[in-house]
Length: 159
Image 1 (cartoon, rainbow, N blue to C red):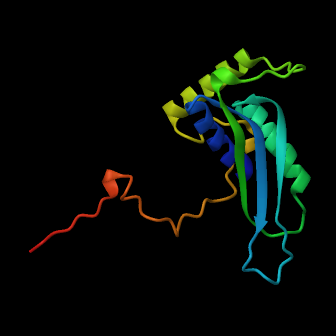
Image 2: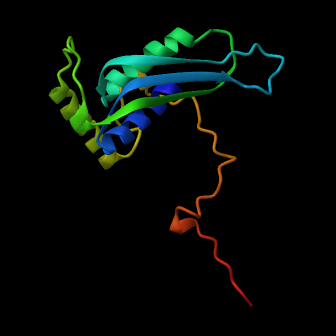
Image 3: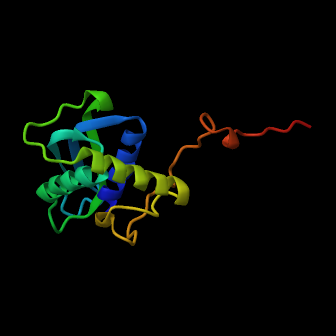
């Protein structure tokens, strides 16, 4: 579920910049400091039949790639999704056998994005993301954002 949620956040950004992608890569890796555990790392690149920015299609292909590389019995630390072969919305080449109703998907993604803007991220999602978040994003080693957020600029007082 973490992989799918990460993918959905990524694809929202893709739509916000008006881009489509036609290559999707999913990766999983082990916890390298648990040397006594079995260790396994793998990735899979999935070629999409036609470039898209629809959560539904991209999550579908992310799940296909994840199922191809997932092995039971390993202690995974990290999973990730990234897309390549990104093209602007007005340069998408349709597949010859592509039967996807792009207008319908665009309207659906527009509604989902509007609800996300209105109610906050994570309130509306694709069913494969699940309803309970059984994993947590670890940000205890996160760097401060004082170079990008004015609210985090350090204040210094002189006496």
